[in-house]
Image 1 (tube, rainbow, N blue to C red):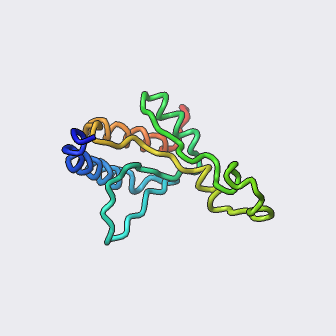
Image 2 (cartoon, rainbow, N blue to C red):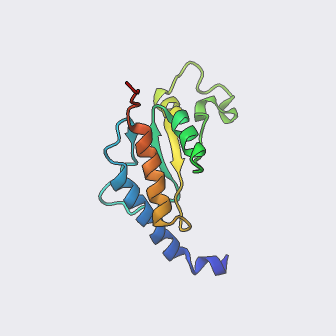
Image 3 (cartoon, rainbow, N blue to C red):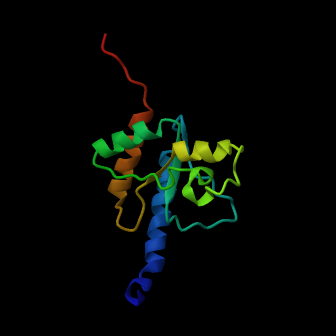
Amino acid sequence: MRVKLRHLDAWNARRVEVADRYQHWLRNIPGLTLPAVPEWAEPVWHLYIVRCVRRDELQRLLSGSGIGSLVHYPVPPHLSGAYRDGRWKGARPVVAEQFARECLSLPIGPHLSQDDAERVAAVVSRFAQPVRLAA
C-alpha cells in the first residue's frame, strides 16, 4: 500500500479531470442526470454515477461498444436482507427504489485516457439521440 500511496494524489487528480470532462460532455443529454456537486465540495470521484430512466438499455449499449459500466446498488436497502427484521414493513421509500433502477457507474479512474473518456461520452450521447427511420 505504501507504494500505491505515493501515486494517490496524481490518481485522484486524473479522476477529477475525467469527471470534469464527463460533466461538460454529458451536461445536456436528455434523460440523463449527472452527479450534483456543491460549490464547496472537492470530490475525488471514486465513482462517477449517472441516473438514467433507461439505465439497462444504456448499459447494454455501453457493453456492446466494449465499455464496462456497473450497477453498484441494484437493491434498495429496505429490500435487502440487512433489513429483513421488518423495520421497513409497510414503508415504501420510492426515491431509494428509483435510484436502484436508474443509477449507473461510468468508467472513471487514473487508467482512463482522454480518448477513452471521450469515447464513453460519445456512446452515451449516441444513446440519447432519437432513432431515425429510413424513408
